[in-house]
Image (cartoon, rainbow, N blue to C red):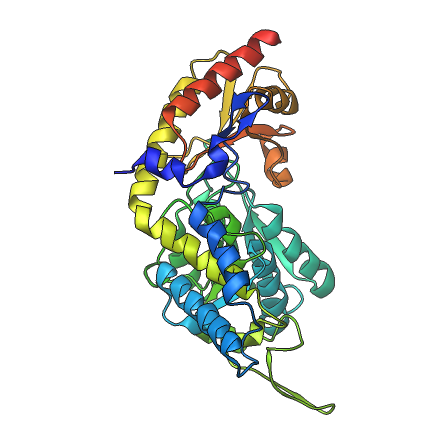
Length: 404
């Protein structure tokens, strides 16, 4: 059971006012707010344990290194990865996908080989593959989405060929909220000896994930979407795959030795972590994961599902409402349009009521094209949101509708 009042006290920003109205923050799919413990961990790191890691013999460097590597173990445990060597720190989901797109294509693909994507992907899981298509001549195949916002699984199964080398799909859609059937997706791909990359940016904050139970080959997420800092993210990869792939960037930390004749690369996970790592970010991310873990992802999922169902029912009472994404399995995202009201107009007027929502194409323009629209209004919920906030949001939408 979630103690909502106690939780809200952990997030000072939720007590702010906007234009004289209490802040209602429904843009959690873009980034989450940060609990006090996470922000204090940033200060503590810079004031007490600030030194470059892995390179110094002095006390502070040793302490920073220990904290950074302990954070890697925290992420390993959070994901139930087999080894800390399977946890690569990146700047976020986008960099992690770019890393795999570059290194996997270089090591495992030839011109004409195929990657399977879906119509609901974020640009971060489209553009890196398009770059490789231009550079290396790989082919992109796309799984369509049905009217409920679910992947067309029959089509997915039909897309495999002898040239298919990777499946790269989102776990949860940032627009539709659809929770994709990832176990079935992975099982089908593995039946064709094809590895799978899952974009977990929208899943990790809301549902429990287990790398060994999923048997997924690569999994990526961003710290700032799970109550942690910006600029830090995670690439999980099975050790057997990471061993095969070449480094993504060169420089310090990812080397064992360097001469002008030859460079010998470092062991995992450091082979993929060129330069000074964000050792403050990693330890703060670990603090965020501890915070989420104390509440419990099962409790979070149950409470957020309750919020989503409540908001959906209320929104449907407004004439002219169109909801995009009504999959049977759905996370806490509600994308909609009201009549002919432009989403930007709705978003700006809700903002004047203190209500923060997202508007536009949500970095998913191919999906918008498939839906035949330019964009939506998106309300996305967190465990610190309340039904009372949803009531105020619904009243705000009604008020905007009356203005038009």
